[in-house]
Image (cartoon, rainbow, N blue to C red; front, side):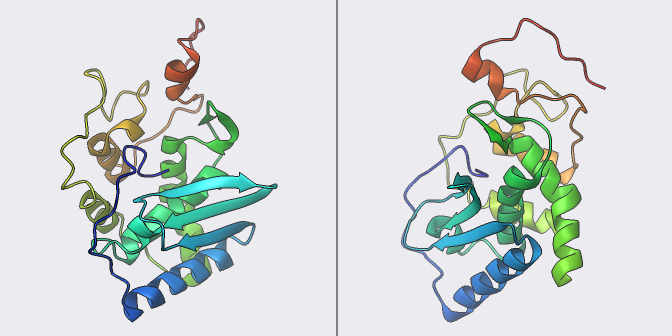
Length: 204
């Protein structure tokens, strides 16, 4: 989930205009055409500021909820990155969630979206994703939040031990700089969920 830090109630400023509905239809059709093994679902009536990748009866699914789909701050670039990120949870190779080995972790999904997903989408439907604009649009969803806490003091975009998904500030910088991921990489959230590992994993 791209917005892993929050699941708050969306306010009444929904963009449910005809133009918005047309944009969402165009986006979902483009993604369905580009990634046919994944089913894309829209739930505009759910006011969750979130999107989700999940498996339902062996079907790979990406869900987009109303708090994101109808948020007036998000344009095509922001929405496209959200969908690319969730698609990356299914398509990317690399570290997995500690609680679900079939779903790629947050940073791997981001990396796939930037390096592979947007290329595949562009080749399929001719779209060019403006990454900086997407990051700015997504940032606006956090602008009114006062309860977001940063990562621990040793965290940062250059710390490979840290999950940048825990802080939008770190995550945004990682997206804009296309931060590399170690070849040998496990999700740093493993330590939080499973406890510290006794072995050391070397980066290559």
